[in-house]
Image 1 (cartoon, rainbow, N blue to C red):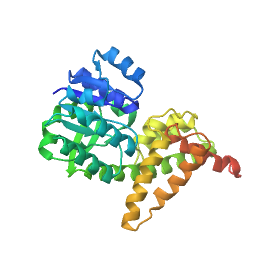
Image 2 (cartoon, rainbow, N blue to C red):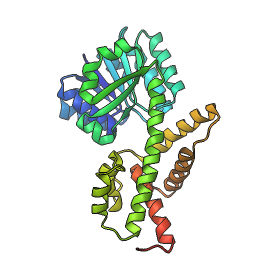
Image 3 (cartoon, rainbow, N blue to C red):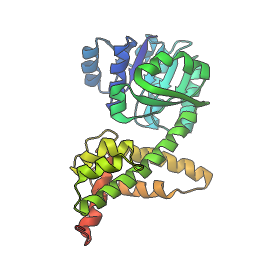
Image 4 (tube, rainbow, N blue to C red):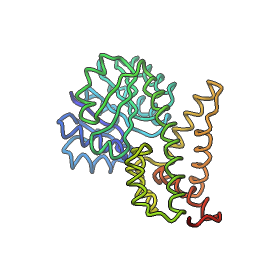
Length: 294
């Protein structure tokens, strides 16, 4: 099953490497050509001249780009090379309506579209431990199991096209709440003068333990915010969630608050840092106040 990847950022590069390890990767393409050339040389695969050329040589095309407009641009660019029966698997996080529009474009060209956003961050992409939430034809999802297995640990068919993105919205709202809780709690612990390594260890082993605390706790209290998932991208995702909520006539406090906090951090120049950079804002609450230690 010859597979190509379009979009070789923090997520796409790891996914490409894992596909190559299983002998499935046939070609790559990236808007920044140098990125594609460097990775292709290491993996001994072809750099396609353009998305259409990649589609022409592949049975499966995996796209992993940042924004709705980018996804539609890539889909339109690859369609001239799309062969009947080719499957396009989009792993970007976009609006449900954008996924459905992309599916229509691919179907008109004789192909099949799956919206397959992921969870697991850069670490999951590099380790082949991503979780896929997929919208589209169940039989096609089953047929592509070897491709999903190469990149992740779990693939779940959620329903028709768009269901994957709706599920990802649930994930992103939950991630916002976890980010708020963990950064706020650790900022409090640090202000209280506690040994934060011990705090993270003991709390992480109890009912409040979670992936984010385990993977980001130590680095954030050390003031290191190397991106696993960029704050600006989570802001984009939560903006999509806000639009979906508006259609339901609902405003969720976690979404609204996190968007405002992220906007301040982006304005301060921290948008390219990991979402754990929210710790910067929580830490400032204590430096401005009177609480120094217990």
